[in-house]
Amino acid sequence: MKQIFIVDDDVAVTNYFKVMLAQTGIYETSVENDSRNVIDQLTEKSFDLILLDMDMPNISGMEILKEMKDRGINIPVIVLTGVNDVDLAVRSMKVGVFDYLIKPVDDDKLLEVINDALEHSDLDMSIKQLPSELSRQGLVNRDAFDYLVTSDPEMIRLFHQAEKLANSDLTLFIWGESGTGKETLARAIHKASPRRNKPFVAVEANNFTQEQFPAFFFGQARSWSKTREEKTGFLEEADGGTLFLNHIEYLDFPMQARLKRVIQRNEYYLESSARIRRSDVRIIVSTTKDLLAPEKESSFSRDLIYHLMVTSIRIPPLRERVDDIMLLASHFLSEEASEAGKDIKGFSDESVDLLKNYSYPNNVQELITIVASAVAKEGKNIITAESLPSILSEEKKITQSKKKDEFKIRKLDDVIVEEVRKTLDYFDGDEKKSAEKLGITLKELNRIIKKIY
Image (cartoon, rainbow, N blue to C red; front, side, top):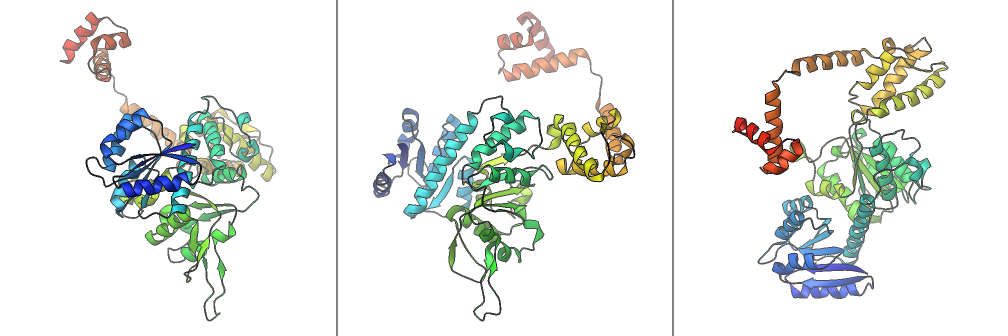
């Protein structure tokens, strides 16, 4: 049975939750009404989840959370508080809280959040326990990831993580630069999930005005005068399946609040209607933006973004997986050449050099465009440097020029002194450990130290 630790200075509250959770038959509980004893309890006993009050005498809930983080105590926490304080909610999510609920809490809602938190914890543990070396052959639903071409070990690991997350209904946040393949990964997750035989609906939030979007997303109720018919929304279209919502940075605050309700309660209402509808949809959201950046602070709900980031996947940009460039380029060349009816077999050495040294600001999508353009231009049976866009050779020249400008010849003694200083800093001034790491004697180290100080 799962062990739940209830922390609240109000005895009536802890007694209520203890009885309510015991009645489920699947949870065992421990109670603490004095916040001064909480950390000792956490170090002495094993718990699967904590229900934590924030406003307590002696030691506050926030202080307990910070102490847990400092000590590396990684247990899912659900905050229960009588104060609706957005800033406090954000600060608690920053230090690792799974969810933040305002008292009084509906029993069914609390049980649902507890279940989600424990599910997330189990998933997180299983992902952390993945072996260091993984292969596509180890994927149970290998065909779901076929369209994602890669040989990069981190990408293969990402597929294994995604496959584990596919079996959950937790809202998933995929983030990465433009063109990295966020929708493709979302489709793979849907295909690997129990919802695979239901619809996958992809929605681009930036294709609508903020005024239009709610009606398209939630649907539009029929008007009382019958002059306007009921309109099916994306949520209803995706019923039973997966809804992928890209570019969430375009959502305004009212829409963000309504999306949060769908995520947390599986409830929504049509435009021009107050009747609540239930939603059976797994939601995957994505963005190319850093929603925690200062410039986004006034335009996106910090509370919502921290909720979303609890279960998230980052797709690395193409420049971080250089070995994939030519693998992908060859794959796209085969497709594009076949479609164009051309017999182009590969790339010249010079074109390979240009392709491997380009930065790809639009990632895989840009590589597809580059290869398609080269195939259209090329009249030979191999892609030459001349058929590639000029921006590739121009960027290479700029990079080489910068490297020459940045390279400065330094005296060997200066290099040695700098390395010794960094090593001493790393070992907090321990000369013996520093000397061992540097492969020199203590006498030699002391001679160099005199130059530093």
